[in-house]
Image (cartoon, rainbow, N blue to C red; front, side, top):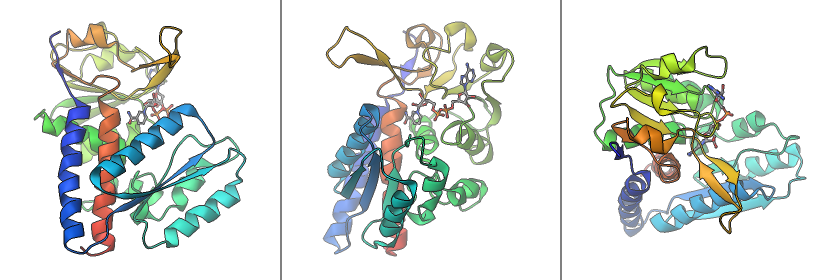
Length: 292
Ligand code: NAD
């Protein structure tokens, strides 16, 4: 394999250790520990795993946490009331609502109900709009984590051609904006309607893929020496292990690792960095809200 692995798990652990040190100092100086609340609706296995990983990370760095697990049948109005309650709770610094939500609840409405200074996922309209501010609010966790990962491996971004495959509100759109506006890359955004996807991806110095389409990106779609970031996580059913599924990224890892200079694995790449960013956002907002 030619490529260096962008080890998100290791970098996220480094960040968590840095945060834990800072939290210990805060507590020693008589300040409160950051407090993250997570709302989980229903009992989807993947969502439960994601939320549990976030709680585990809170424990590791010394944050307080609150998990609110509501049944699938909760009404949108009741969920909005719960968010209001947390918005008013001065002890809670950050709030995340695990997506997806059941079909009868508007994710856009619920997400935007969170007060922007508690929105540690960076999904509210205000934080989203402030991405293109010299003084951004809380940045969306996944794009924030990807930039941090590239920087910690000293990968040049400024002036490079970044091709983003996917234009979702949670990943592709904010990622491409951050790369163009803050990191000064030259950015191409591709999506489901893009014609001849490979002609674009082959031009990328930095290729970021967030589609949820397992192994969409093959080696012949990647330029020699590119840095490849695979955001996708899809559960594929299998009878070959006791869990009953394997996780697949959007990039054909085995093939592409032969051609790229850097590549993220799935799992162990972007996922842990998203959680690390969530913790960084929670620490940032705790310090700002309590003028520490
Ligand atoms: P989404 O479904 O909202 O968006 C998918 C995007 O991919 C769309 O822009 C669509 O146009 C594009 N797309 C789909 N098929 C395509 C194709 N054949 N060619 C080109 N573009 C195509 O998904 P999302 O929320 O952006 O998530 C994408 C993937 O990333 C999912 O697998 C999700 O689970 C994963 N994800 C991972 C993390 C993490 O922390 N690792 C965070 C968020 C999302």
